[in-house]
Each structure stands twice: as C-alpha cells, then as structure tokens.
Picture 1 (cartoon, protein in one colour):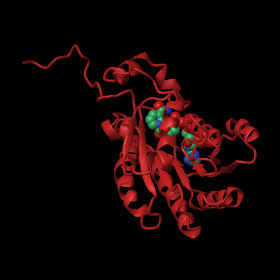
Picture 2 (cartoon, helix red, strand yellow):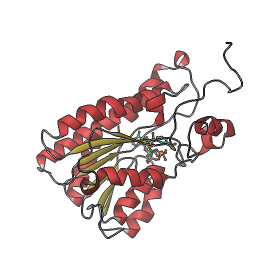
Picture 3 (cartoon, rainbow, N blue to C red):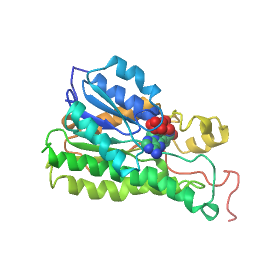
Picture 4 (tube, rainbow, N blue to C red):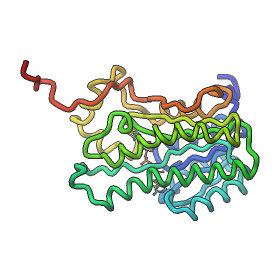
Length: 272
Ligand SMILES: NC(=O)c1ccc[n+]([C@@H]2O[C@H](COP(=O)([O-])OP(=O)(O)OC[C@H]3O[C@@H](n4cnc5c(N)ncnc54)[C@H](OP(=O)(O)O)[C@@H]3O)[C@@H](O)[C@H]2O)c1
C-alpha cells in the first residue's frame, strides 16, 4: 500500500473503548496510517501505554464512563484541546454480559445496564462528536463508524439485551444519522461494521466452548474467527473519505459469511 493510500494522515480519530481488543487494534491501525488518535478507556489504561509510548505526539488518552453525560463531554473537550477537532468517531466500546439469561428471567437492572452502556453511551458519544463538528465547522473526512454485531442481525438467545442494542445501532441509528450528519457536514458519513465472533478479551472465555464455536460457524463458509485486525481494517476503509467517500448508511458484515443461527441439532428433523 502506498503511503497515505487512505488519506487518513493527520485526521483526528476518537476511538471509544480503545483499551479493549478491537479498540486497540483499530487505534494502532489508524496511527500506522498517520492519523491522530484519542484513546478512550474506562477502567483499563495499561493496554494503551505501549501505543502512547510509540506515538507520543499523535495520541491522547481520555478516561470516561461512556454513559455519563458530563464525563463524555469532558472527554471530547480534552480531545479537542490536545489534538484539535475530532473528524472521525469510532463507536466501539461495549459490553456483552456473558451469563446466559432468558428475557423472562432478566432483571430490569441487567437490561438497563446493557442498554445504558451500549446504546445510551453511543448516543452520548455521537452527540458530543456532532456538537464539536458544528462548533469547529469541521468539514473534511468526517465519518462515524459504529460496531454492531451478528447479534443485531440474527438475534442472540439468552442475550436479548445485547442483541437489541446492536440492532438499534445497525438500524435506527445508522439510518437516521446518515441523513442528519449532512445537515452540517455535507460529505459526512455514518456506517456500521457488524462482526461475528472476534478473538478479544470479551469473547475469549466463550470461544473456549467447542459447542458454541461449532454452532456459530456451522453456517459460515469461511469458517474463521475474526482477529481484531480483520475488523480494524474494515473500520479504516469506512472511515476513509478517499476510500469510502460515497458510502453511507451501510452495515458491513465481517462474519465469515454467516447465514444464520443453528437452533435445533441437525439430527432433529421435522416430521413429514
Ligand atoms: N468480541 C466479539 O466477539 C465481538 C463480536 C461482535 C461485536 N463485538 C463488538 O465489538 C466491540 C469491541 O469489543 P471487544 O471484543 O474489543 O471488547 P473488549 O475487549 O471487552 O473491550 C470493550 C471496551 O469497551 C469499554 N467499555 C466497557 N464498558 C464501558 C463503560 N461503561 N464505559 C466506557 N467504556 C466501556 C472497555 O473499557 P475498559 O476496559 O477500559 O473498562 C473496553 O475498552 C464492542 O462493541 C462489541 O460489542 C465484539
């Protein structure tokens, strides 16, 4: 690839959940392209330290609970004063509560927490991002890329709370915001990446379960668990005005070509 093929050199990117598996790989990929990156984290700054040491003048670390209005506003103010106006927002943070719970048994607290972090947190980050776009009159290489999930497309039994947040991002948010952003940034774009299983701290314990993996990949022709870099490269493509400047309102699957879910064992056939 020629230097700055994607035109991302000098572009300021804000990555939520930069301290996690996908966030870290995505942040590194942007930095390698010459972008400036605000690295958001909540509880884990240690994973980010090597990146900051390697790219001291083009990184800025900000801590915030993603669903706390004041903390997110402060994080964007810090990002603006350290690296200038943010042009690209990667909405990557997220939780996937690992315990299997049927919705009929789900507590309001459990439901509310997942929605608050995954969905309200996304709303708050996107709102702050858009407000500073207007305030600083940002026009060049403006993009939002959200991270959805196969759960948002096919549903996910025992994890309806998580699936709902991802469907909302992949549907209502992506489709509404692609029409809103052009009101103040005529070339601004909003897209979402929808991965299947990715080898990250979020998924590692579940991927140790052979049965889960077999079910998940039974309809996936490529039969491949994504590495964080597989997702990161797709995010970079969508974030680049040069590469994806006429693409908006789309959800791009990064899921080995998954066709759906296996619900019944294949040996259980319906009576004819
Ligand atoms: N892994 C998969 O198989 C998979 C599949 C499909 C979609 N996804 C999606 O991909 C994205 C990245 O997932 P990942 O696998 O990289 O997860 P991960 O390694 O667990 O990282 C999650 C990130 O979200 C941040 N976060 C969690 N709760 C937060 C809160 N309350 N406030 C602020 N930040 C918070 C974490 O920050 P701290 O660590 O600093 O607290 C961390 O940086 C998520 O949106 C996830 O839903 C993952």
